[in-house]
Length: 374
Ligand SMILES: *Cc1c(COP(=O)(O)O)cnc(C)c1O
Image (cartoon, rainbow, N blue to C red; front, side, top):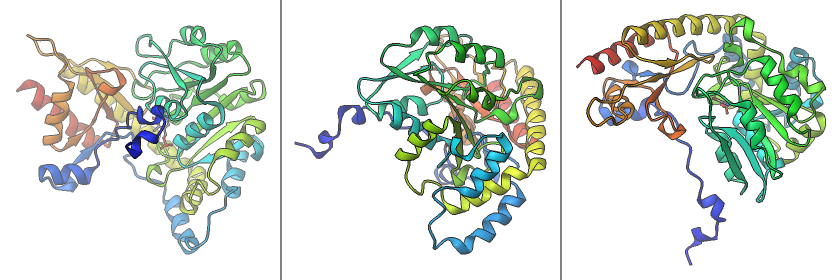
């Protein structure tokens, strides 16, 4: 018998995550100059990262031979101060992806299920499947989460509900009132993960303090990341705010040293650089307007987004009516522009574009113009 067949069927059924194409790979494949390539594929921060984080990394380099602080004391202390929550209710992860996996490890197993929306972040089905649990996928409404339908989809086997707010790749957002009402209705013995990876990009009037709800909802787990507005995607660091009892469970299933020392130092410093975050927010807002205006001028529809990315609809070809997004993605690659196809999210007509620097956005729009008007 083949050794691979010894792996549980639910592991063998995992469909691998498809990451954005790296710049180096595209340069190799098409013989392009790396410096001329525009990558708007992975919702990274086009401004880079905080100089304070860079200094912290340089200071921390000398400590590389030592194991990191497995309790992440300094980062948790800074987060505790920022969010007004005890350190016992904070869990750090190797990216917030790690925290999603930890929740799945702690609460899912064969015979159990998670609930999430159609078009939701790809890690939810992966984390669920890897525990042999079942994914209950609820049809989206106007590309967004249909919370009443998600509530109705909860079964006796359900232990976790995943909600990305804003959601990736749709950029849709559930307002505070609806979220609070939902939390009030979900049975208290089901974990609700609110994944707030893009929360810093919300317009001020739509922001809400999810952490406030932790006092009344012990089943709530809020996840945040340093990968997006803080620009530390390559270092892998994120955190969860939750009930101390839940935090204790997540800490039991995590690796003892899941976040490396450079990431811990950088995140702690980055958290204090409010100016960098503000600048990133402003640049994103302007870039989003630039892209929206550009898409309007090209007659392209898009899903209004609350994140640092936007999904634009590529019209189908006249005759056979087949989706063209894949072909446009390929042609963009040849022009040195990397965006993200989202057919794997049941959005075969859309391409997800990360908001870049003004000249990068212009580069993408120019390339699209060329392709669509040919
Ligand atoms: C990017 C993203 C994350 C963050 O991933 P990291 O592991 O922290 O880099 C989490 N959730 C969603 C919805 C995302 O798009």
